[in-house]
Amino acid sequence: MDTLFSDALRDLLADQCTPQVVRAIESQPQNRPLWDALESSGFADAMLSESQGGAGLGLTEAFHLFAMCGGHCVPVPLGETMWARALLGQHQVSLPQGSITWASGQRRPQGELHADTVRMGQVADHAIVTDGTQAWLLATASAAKSAAGFPLDASLTWPGAALAQALPLPFVPDVRTLQACLYAAQLSGALMAVFERTLQYANDRQQFGRPIGKFQAIQHHLSVMSEHAFAARMAAQLGCQSATVNPDPLRVAVAKARTSEAALEVAALGHAIHGAIGFTAEFDLQLLTRRLHVWRQAAGSESYWHTVLGQALLDRPQAQVLELIREVSDVH
Picture (cartoon, helix red, strand yellow):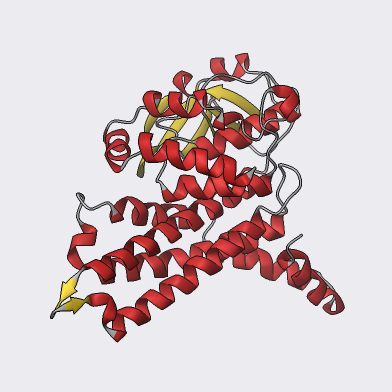
């Protein structure tokens, strides 16, 4: 079933999510043609139970789809929507049409709900927003919107009236952990794509009568990139090891720490091998490496998640340290 879904999504993205489409959506954020193609193909409901019209994929199976979103720079919140619909369906909440993203917000004295950086907020139709004690499903169209760093992100503010009309959700998601798990998977896909593109470029680019990939220095850089990309992929798969749609927080910590750590190295080496051309807007490499830098810090960088892991070790009796390491690294 993994291969069936992965192959179908790969074919769809190759046709509908070309670099030209990604650039167009980044320059003028809108999601309709691409999102309609994804939604009509059923991928947005892939993690919904079969009784609710979905494919019943668990988090372990969904990893491959998340990673593919990263490798293709998908400029709409497909992974976020898959996960959001699964959780909403699990709690018997009516599912809205359109895409859904996640956000952490703060209540303001005037009754507004404000979220500083909503990932994909420029193109998402809805957002699940939590202030830590309650969560709401809100339409992004009812919020005041402004740009927030990356072209597809937004700062959103819902007026008190919109919040008063929204029913609180029957669950309060751990947004940071959910996002970290998703970004780790997307990072793993983008890391592998950067490595594969760079390897191809090194084999194609001729210098002094032979491919630059034949030079020892370039081979060393490629081997380091390969180590980081494959280690990050294994860590991200561990982060998604779950029979349900809920991830294990410590596995997520390992996944996000390792993938974020790899992002800096792989982006730097990829650009070093490509030379000046890799930085140009016309070259596709920057579509991936910009995302590596954004996703590396989103939901906590490697230093944040290393601290989480370190604290978990300190909180365990010394005799249980090895047991904890096995818990977060064993593949079931």
